[in-house]
Image (tube, rainbow, N blue to C red; front, side, top):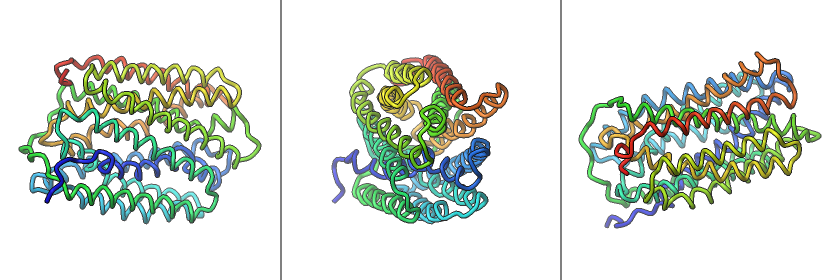
Length: 398
């Protein structure tokens, strides 16, 4: 007998497993492994190239898998087959990533990991409208945002404090498989919402405005996340790479845990109020935090900025997901979410490329580099929030 009520926690648990991997890699391990394999002097440029390539692969996979996923959904699929395949490929790639002995092997492993996880991520992002009533999108989105923050936190802690590469890869793999199993098992016991009719992908003005706004905000986010470890290394100046990883892990943990609190606080306003305002409040808080980072010189100031930024980011995530579930067409949801999610993936390309170009152009070195990166992040976030107000209240169902 199918379950009557979807459980947002169980539905979102797979997101925790996926985001733990990104919390470990994008915040710490990708940078640290690059430093280990190419040396400190070349690490910034090598990291930028690797992050850019991985994001390109993610973009291609998500766009390609979306129409296939939607077609399966119209035939009664829960999309579980995509979750399983992505999990298996991702698990294999994690072992290759942490076992890589040179930068070429690391690059190949990261490409496979991006391909595998994004095979699951594209279809998975349609899970809320697949099984949850439209009136409850905000509350369900808050669970997704909270579990994203919790996963990022757990992954960052593992990457910062587990020095054994095999143990780290095994822990992340076990979490990915375990959370995926819980979500898939619960999903198969639910009744799907009525399958929407096939709809063509229409690039409307609302879609374009939402895409641009989201992309700008995420460029700011990935600039903050990607250069945080370099900020710790060059501004806070711990005595060793191990200490740099540990302090970075503490900051990312604080960011993500407070982000979960921000997500919880934003759930009701996102369902009952103007989602643009909720997103703007979140973005404004992040901008304030970036300003604190820029003027800080010690760990206490950086920790305070991290807590403020995490709170704002959690608030933004809830409103962002809720707006997308309202704007995107239900009959082509995975397809349009694959395109929509390019607004997350492309910033992974733009953020390191743009920041590297600015730093090279201005010949900024040492502590000046990360501070300039955070100033760019503040401007990018501000532009994204301003652009969001091009969406009309009617468009987002207010």
